[in-house]
Length: 192
Length: 260
Image (tube, rainbow over the protein chains, first blue to last red):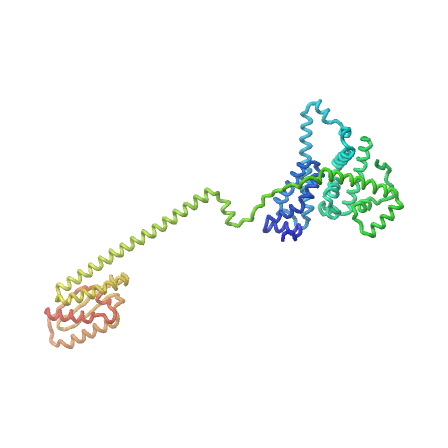
């Protein structure tokens, strides 16, 4: 049974004999990879695309997979790269859009987001603040936060996925949470 | 409201706060840290603040992510192919069809050629056999008309027919064989020479020699030399033991004697 095998054994099987076995890897990791992509991109459609592209890229490069690495870390690295590529493209697109847009529209577009309409509930304001705060984190810190909070991975899993020592993972998460705390303090102060 | 107090610079338990928050402590470490929290308000406050950040992220996830369906990821898996499949893939279907067509035509042509050739060979063999038979019968007729009475001719013809059938089986070497019979009249010296007829048995030779001796002993008077030189059909001597060439040879000798 393929389901009884480890990720690494399944990949080996897919490379040597049965490419269909990779389907089990997809089943095991699609939700977590989707969560990671969603946490990094904050958009459902973009996150789904990124997840799909992650698995396709992994499947195409199965033969390049090194047996000494973990499949989970390999998949996460591909997913993070896919998300970063998408963000870069998005940034380029929005910048070119701003350059070409009418100054009057620009004014409307860049209106401060913390001045949300009063009709929105306080909870939604807080969630929007959290999203913005997470998005503004440096990529290395953001990645760890998303893996821990969205994917609910253990520290050891994050360590394997990022090829970082366990202590580094914890210190990065601590640093990320501290930054988020400060950002949220600022935004809540402004909102209030 | 968040607590804006600075962290205590002397308290370096950042990783422990995170470990405690996400329950990544052993029981012993957990107890030690809890003891520390009782005495360190900074760490306790920080734990509370980071816990609030974490729960805010969880709320965000709950609201915006948990309700989402997982993406329906589709991957077109390639099947493992053998060398034949790769070869077929290499050849486009059109080329493959054309090649198959040519191969079929070539096979049909080859079969047709083989059948045609074997038919032609059969015809040639039949013609050659007919000619051979005709030659043999003509020669026999000549012998019969010149030398033998009708009843003897009939015997020879019969035996020739039988032997011709046997000849169809034997190879062409029989055709080339020459036979020469020299019968010397009253001296009765009979000399039979035959060339390369493998079917003539040693017994036949012995019989011929016996005839010669009989003839020599029977006739004491010297007579005129009479030579019959003929080329009978080789089949006369291609008879195995039990054939009737004894009779024929004696007939021939008798006939020769009577003519004289």
